[in-house]
Length: 306
Image 1 (tube, rainbow, N blue to C red):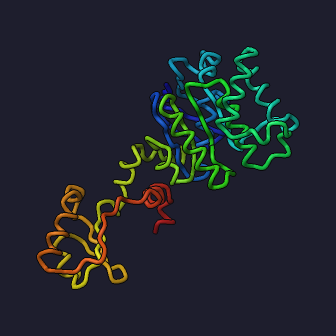
Image 2: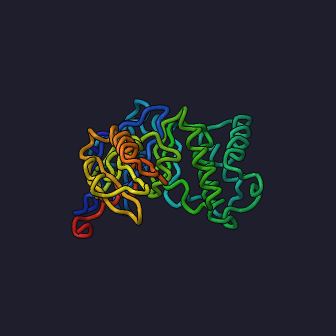
Image 3: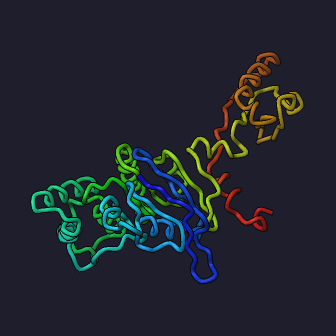
């Protein structure tokens, strides 16, 4: 549904997006991650046709955004950064206006508004003007306009920005449900949203893609992935070191596999050693890897890492 080919955007001497390529299929929710200034919002704006690329190509549902903009944009629902809207309109008036812009006739327009009001939980503020809304409700209202025409492609820039924890959970659940039948790209800097809503994630840094995979594949890039943490009476670092590198941890030990091929066998080897030595286990678990550690290692400048 979404095909990005060698996308480049320059602003004078600055290369904000530098040769980005990826696809998103129907039924996929792609998390677009990166530090501030990495090129996330610029990429989203080019995907939707809001901003032309310096070079490269964007195709939505087989339509080139530059050559067939109307056909491509009919398929897209877009929530821009900072959730802009018309502050002097009521929520209901704004959603009716958005539906009319999308070409929905009277009955279809009414049903579309009712559907997104329910999806985004806007019943209690329908007749308030947008400028009187809290930041969270403003964001929900802008999300509702992105969904008004039931698009096949959703491009959401920071969709949980400004929401409280309960609202964030609702939006993540909504994205997860919609992602079963649509192609969705949403940008975020909140790593927990990768697990909550994404089937795949891309990390972009300084305009380039530096990682691309499922949440499990990204976690496997962590230095912690596959390590086993053991707390047991009688356990010693010396004996555990036969299985891999050992790190003491406040009365416990973390054992790292010698290489990635040994990850699957390490937990069983620890259990066998515990049984052989007769240690009394107080706690043991396998580490699945941490996304924030992967993110920091990939995106921090070398000078900061040092």
